Length: 147
Figure 1 (cartoon, one colour):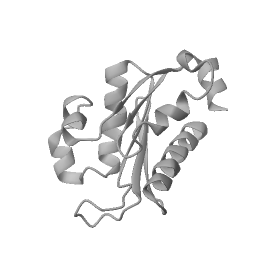
Figure 2: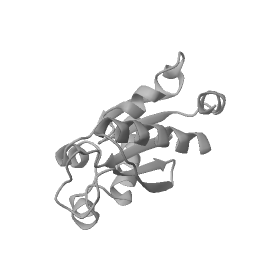
Figure 3: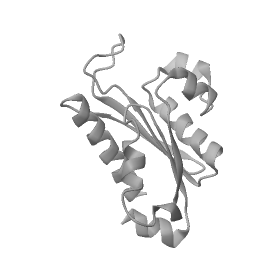
C-alpha cells in the first residue's frame, strides 16, 4: 500500500539503520519500481558513523543514549539531509543477545519517521537476535504504511 502511495505522491524515502542492519532498506526495495521512491540508505552501526555521516550530535548521544527516540529522530533527519529524500526512516536498538551495559533491555528498538517534522516510537521485541531485527524492520514499514 505504501509503495503505491509513495509513487502517486512522488515522495522519496531513505533509511538510516543500526540494529536492523539494512533490513528496512531491503523491505523498501523488495518490489519492482523501488527506484521511483527509494534513494538509498546507511547502516550506521557505530557511534562514529551516526555522528560523522548522519550528523547525530555527540551531546545527543551522551544525553539520551544510542538507543533513544532522540537519536532515531536525528538519524532520520540526517538521512534526509544526506540523500535529499522527503521522508527518512531510522531504527536504533539492541537486538541482542547481549546488552550494552546500560539498563536498556535487549529487544528495545527506537524507530523514527521524519518528513520535516518527526515522530518516534520505542518498542520492546522478544525472541532471538534475528527475530528482533525482523520485527523491528516490519514495524518500521508499518509506521511508513500508517504515514
